[in-house]
Amino acid sequence: MLGASGMVGQGAAVQLRRLGADRLRLGARRPDALRRLVGGRLDGHGEVRPADATDPESLAAFCTGCDIVINCAGPTYQLKETVAAAAVAAGAHCVDVAGDDPAHERMVARGLAGTDRAVVFSAGVLPGLSSIVPRWMARAFERPATLTAHVGGREPCSPVVAADMLLSLRTGGADGAAFGEALAAWRAGRRRSRVLRATERNRVPGFPGLVAATPFLSAETERLARALALTDVDWFNVHPGSAVRAEMLRLPHYLTEAAGPAGAVDPTSTTAGTGAGESFGVRLARAAELDLAGRSPFYAMAFAMTGRAAGGPAGRTVLLRTPSSYHLTGLVGALAAQHVLAGDVPPGLHFAADVLDPELIVDGLHAASASLALSLTVSDTAPARGDSRSPADAGPDLSAEDLVEEGVL
Image (cartoon, rainbow, N blue to C red; front, side, top):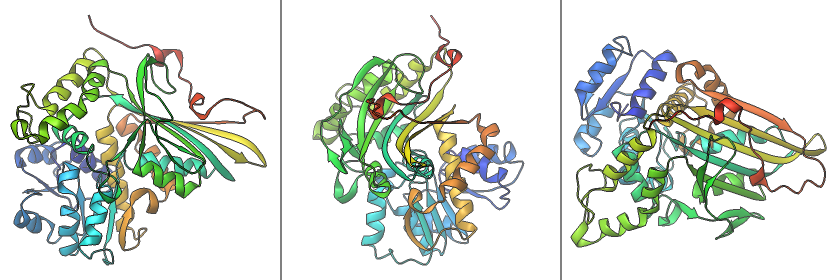
């Protein structure tokens, strides 16, 4: 596993051990952190190797002899297909917890579309569970029609995540497009621009208190809408913290500075200066700390789907909550690797949501719920005929105690 010293990588390693893996090779540029992980949470199971995903020789040496390589290193939009290509060259399968359209396209461009190894991209939370859970929900319907999602949380932000956010404004989608489009939605089977609006300090399904919500239609969500033949999809990125929200609104400004000759920065650096004196990563990490002060971290995914079942209108809502999206991403990557090694995934290039059995993944979430303090709540409803609510009105209800937030003065 590459990137094993980070929050996602450590989470994946712990989950692999829980699933019974005892031959783990862990690689990162900071081997000392890996030795502590092996000696502590992995009970001595794990071979530690220094590894750098940006160094071809180091990467090739790490992949040699592996059955499968799990990539938890980043930034995703800088590495693209680098790890997957090295794994295939070494005769190994590959699971990438990120690796969106650009990685898939670069593998095709390298002539690796017909590889006899299984390569699974987008095997994390978002992208990943963001499509796997709706596909699982759709099995309750004869014909699903609409989906509304509210996704986000209040948790620490790593420099790699900050870098990917910055880079996603330019890449992440198919054919060199950005990762997605703000304010857009899926309507009548196609993308429609500027049909929704951002909201501030409103209550949204599945989240405590007052939050900001930004409509956003990603390439992954468009693939999901086409696969399920959905008529309408509303997707909202939720920002429970005001400090992180303020930095997110400045993202285009940071991108302009980073692109200019006077303000060129390395987006993975936590110390690189911009015209404002600090990098986006530094400011976003600090903002996340401010939003977390005196509060418990959490990440939530609230989905509401409508359609037809048993000959009439039907609805299903799912609320997934966990203290850490990083550890949850590690779990999804570990589950994907388990199914690849079990022969459940055919050779070739795949996105996780297209090839992993959603029933098995949801079963895996339930099995890991205690280790991750993870909850997954399902509610089925039967909308009355003529119900005029929009999909955005639907969603899981929270109990009174969920709406109480601890805080600090």
